[in-house]
Length: 332
Ligand SMILES: Cc1cc2nc3c(=O)[nH]c(=O)nc-3n(C[C@H](O)[C@H](O)[C@H](O)COP(=O)(O)OP(=O)(O)OC[C@H]3O[C@@H](n4cnc5c(N)ncnc54)[C@H](O)[C@@H]3O)c2cc1C
Ligand code: SF4
Image (cartoon, rainbow, N blue to C red; front, side):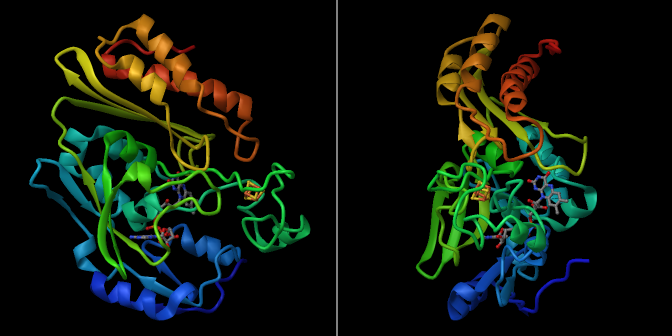
């Protein structure tokens, strides 16, 4: 059995206190929300904080509220179960409800939070292993080692962004509010990530995600499709998030964002452009699906083979668009 290493758990009741505690303890401290990703990582000695600043007791972080611009603001501490069941989220941002409800298992969704899900660690077959396993292969540069075992000549880590909600939030044009020692700031979700398996977040380690803001949903149609080995429990090996703003039957804005194909969610920009100003039809959907598969360059470091995952990008994008167009989905 893998055991947690010793650590101190601090339980602030306000964001301001949590920011202060993170500042007091510096790089030795980490934030923990539901702990569903962090504790297993600590058991495997991938994270070795001596202090954890717990966010669960901060009431202001939980809940969903309307915004002045007719969008929704979801507190970072809101559980995935609550997000997936919230009537307004389900009615207006269907893809987010689907993605939150597709994370892992009911028990983990009851504990896991939206904030934890957008910050969740990147994954790799050579990294998500016990300490002994990693030691036997002499570790890798993401933790304790020197080289990348997937691409030994590479100067960087290629661990895979594996959050279900991150590609959806990006496609919806959501933004995140951050609180840190320098005060508060808001950035688009698309600016929260960078293409590096180790430093995959642009925010500072002591900055707390406090809220995720969703823009108004007028004319919005959205969908999230997830590929994984089993129908439950597993992380995505491919996620396809599509958000279209419709002006009648014409697409006025489109974003297609792929999950689990790189160290960050990857927007298929050209594919989105092809949709704007057009009506959804089979021929257009075929062209868009071809274009969307181009930026997906999965490596051989997660479940299922990478050529299969690349091929499935095209299939899932076509299915997602068929669903949004109300067309019968082709099996392929
Ligand atoms: C068996 C198993 C299956 C899983 N399957 C999936 C899956 O299918 N899809 C998926 O997306 N995830 C999956 N997960 C990972 C995890 O359960 C979820 O991502 C969950 O949403 C993480 O939320 P949490 O609140 O538990 O985060 P925690 O574990 O508490 O934290 C995760 C990371 O986020 C940071 N963090 C947490 N909250 C904040 C905040 N407010 N501000 C700044 N940083 C913060 C922590 O410091 C840590 O680095 C799985 C985990 C397990 C163990
Ligand atoms: S991509 Fe390379 S460096 Fe990154 S976790 Fe995998 S083996 Fe390690």
